Length: 575
Image 1: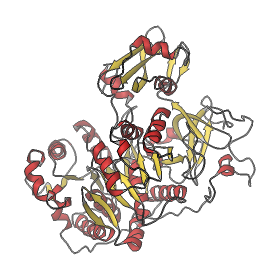
Image 2: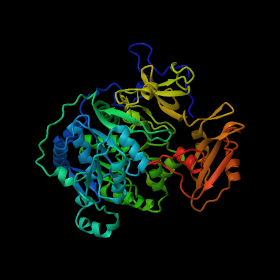
Image 3: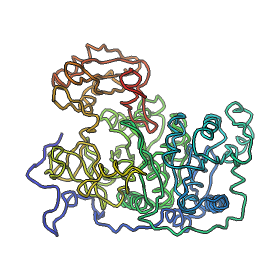
Image 4: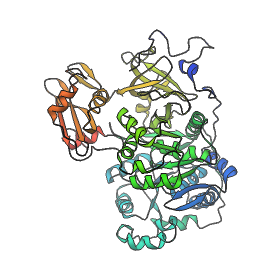
C-alpha cells in the first residue's frame, strides 16, 4: 500500500481550505460543481427532448428509439394510474434487463409511485420478505415460468394483489418473435389472466394521457433499493428523487471528459435491479443520450458478440465479468479498441484480473470505484482522465465528503494514511432504511453515514478499502482482514478465485478458513497454498484450513463472492 504523510489532515480546518482530494482533481472537473434537485424522471424527459430519434436500447437485435420508449412510458403511466397507482404506492420490478424495465421504471416515477427493485433470481422466502417489508402491492414481471411460478405463492402468502405480465415476444425482432413460443415452449408461462394477472396490453393500450405527479425531490421516495443481505436481513434503502438525480450528475460530471453525448454506446450486461447498473448503466446512459446494449443475463459469448457488433464505448462490469473475458479463447480475435473506459464495481478488482484483462484486450483504461446501496451508489472512482492508482477505488466524486473515523471512539477524524471506518456525506446518501428507525439511527451518527468499511485516504485523496468491519476476523483479540489474505492467496498462479472467512473456534474465538477454485489444468494442494502464503501473511493470518473446490465459489447476483453463502454451504451459518 502507498505510504502517506500521516501528518496531513484529510479535511478542511479553515473556511476557505480545500479538501485534500480537491487539490489533485482531474483537470476540468470541479468538486463543488452545482448539483440540482429534480424529479428523477427529468433525466428521461431531458434525453427525449434532445435525442428522440436516437436508439435508446437494443435487445437481442430489436432497437427502440427514445421516442418509442417515450410513447410506452406515457401509456404505461396512464394505465398504472387507471389502476390506482399514485404517490405512496410501491410497484415492484421483477424483471431482467429488457425494454420493459425502462418503460415501467420511468412510468412508475411519473405517477409519483416508488420503484421497488427485485432480483429475478430471488427464492420464495426472499421475495415474500421484500414484498411485505416494502409494502409492494403490484409486481411487474415477464411471461417466463421461472418468474411467474413464484408469483402464485406470493398471492397466498403476502399482501401482493396484482401482477402485470409482459410478453417476451413483444420485444423480440422478426422472426425470433414467431419462433420463441415454439422453441422455448417449456419456458413460457401459461397464465389465466383476470383479476390478479394483467397483460402488458391491459396497461399500455390507451391514449397515453396521465397526470404527471408533483414531486418534492428531497422528500419523495423514487426507489426502495434493498441491500444485499450478505451480512443479515436485507433492508430497504430509501433513495429519494434528489438522491438518485444527484448521483447521476455527480457520475456524469466525473466521466464527462470522455463522454460523447448522443453517440456513445453503453454495455448493459449488469442487471438494472442492482443499484450500480440502475444508476450508471441506465440513468447515466439516458442522461447522455447513449444507446444501451441490453443483455438479460451475463452470457460470455453474447457479450463478446456485442463488442463486435455494437462497438460499445463504455463498459461497466464486475471483476468476475472482466476475468471471464480475459480467460476466453475468443478474446484475441476481437477488436476492443472501441472501448474508452471500463468501470469496475460491486467487488474488489484483483490486480491479477486487471493485468490479464488489459493484456488480452488492450483496454488499459480500466478503473475501480466504490459505492453502496445506501449511497445511490457511487461515492468514489478513479478518474477517467487522470491517474488510476492500482489498489485504490479513486477519489470522492463531486459533492461527496469521505472522512475516516476512529473505530474506537466513533467520532475522531483521522489523518491521511490512518485506517478507520469510512464515513460519507453527500447529496446521494439515502434518507434512511425503510420503516427501520433504529437501524437508520445506528448508521447515521455525528452527521454522516457510517459504511461499516475500513479504509484510508492517501495524501492525494485517493481512497483505499481495507475490508468490511463485519467481515473482520478476531483471532485471540488480533484483527485479521480477510481481503488482505485473499489478495495474497489470489497471487498463486493456480488460483482462479478465492474467499476467506471467519469460523467459530473454541480455542481462538474465531479462525480463518479459505476456499479456492483452481484454474483449469492447474493443480495445487492445501499444503502448497499454505506454503505459498507463509512469507505473505503473518502466522495468525494464515488460514487454519483451505478447502479446494471443483465448482465455482458462490456469488451474489451482481457477481460478488458471497461469504455468507459459503458458510451456509459448509453448515457453519444458517440460510
